[in-house]
Image (cartoon, rainbow, N blue to C red; front, side):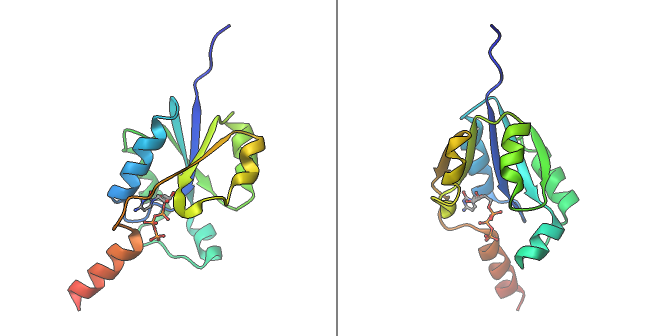
Length: 135
Ligand code: CTP
């Protein structure tokens, strides 16, 4: 019997792509053979009250250029995770540990992992630093 590729799935906005993102994607990629990123669309972010500096299309291009990422798909709503896990035959669902416990309900469908965030870097902090330096 042929063994199938092990598929890993994560979600996020990945605005102003930074080293915390790179390290998360690198560590997640080691859980399997293919890492798929569900990238929050600008519409979905607007509904969450979040506005990315970089457009969806550009964030997707940046992510696709990352060697740890195999595929980028749009994340349009909260409820699509179950459908995506089934559609992509996902083995491992992973997020940073700021989401610890939030997606435990998916454990009936696949392995769920929360990885430690890289300390001292976030999109929010970079934005604040840029504003401080330009004031
Ligand atoms: N992440 C991480 N380490 C960081 C920042 C983010 O591991 N220092 C992870 C998050 O836990 C998440 C993914 O990267 O699983 C995407 O996070 P995102 O919210 O897009 O990035 P943040 O920098 O946390 O953005 P914000 O400050 O807007 O929340």
